[in-house]
Length: 110
Image 1 (cartoon, rainbow, N blue to C red):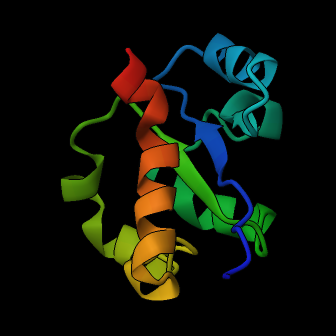
Image 2 (image 1 turned 180 degrees about the vertical axis):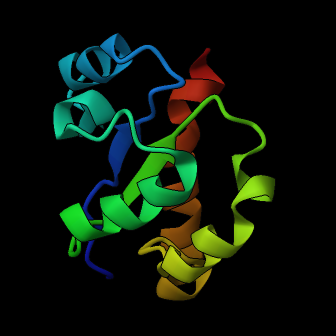
């Protein structure tokens, strides 16, 4: 059986209420607001490189309300994108099905 990957750190962008990071931590999710990292005033082109500099060995995902970020900064995102620890190729069929169900159980229950 494959080793279960560490949960991704949820990095809450300044476009989202930073109290959400605290609420996520209360629910035992790994989360941090950009304001906690001291980089909440960075412009988008500088944000992703700075996150990679501050957390070089950590897997994280940026939680943002900025719908245009993937289009506006696709080149910067592509340069900094890392292979996710959760790809289909890392699991056999049974492990993948289990992962998907567990990952989305909270949504299915709602």
